[in-house]
Structure formats: C-alpha cells, structure tokens
Length: 55
Image (cartoon, rainbow, N blue to C red; front, top):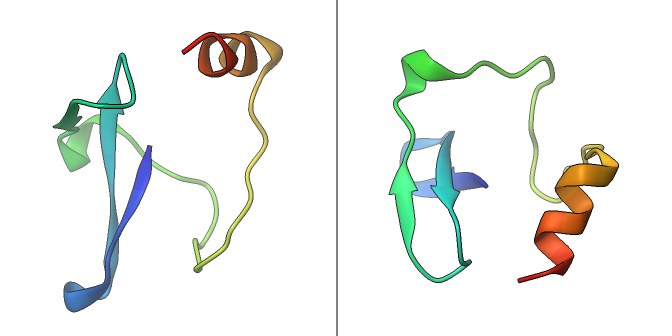
C-alpha cells in the first residue's frame, strides 16, 4: 500500500496480509515509475485484484 507522509512531503510503502496490520517496506526495496500525487490511481494485476477482493 502506498502511503502519504504529508508532514514530510513524501510517500512510503507498507505491506499487509489482512488490511489491519501493516509493515513498513524499506525504501531501498522498491521503486515507482511515476510521480505520485494525492488521489493517484495505478493499475493492478488481476491476481492483485483477486487477493484484495478476497480480504
């Protein structure tokens, strides 16, 4: 999940298996190929959709 750290003007990534408990992902372990803004939309795969919908 891409999160907004508004106070510091940046975004960060978190990971969850249940949408209740989150673990911060080290910024060296991911990259993004766009400049996120509030309300950004990004595509997800069918597999990602199915996993999210099953929670």
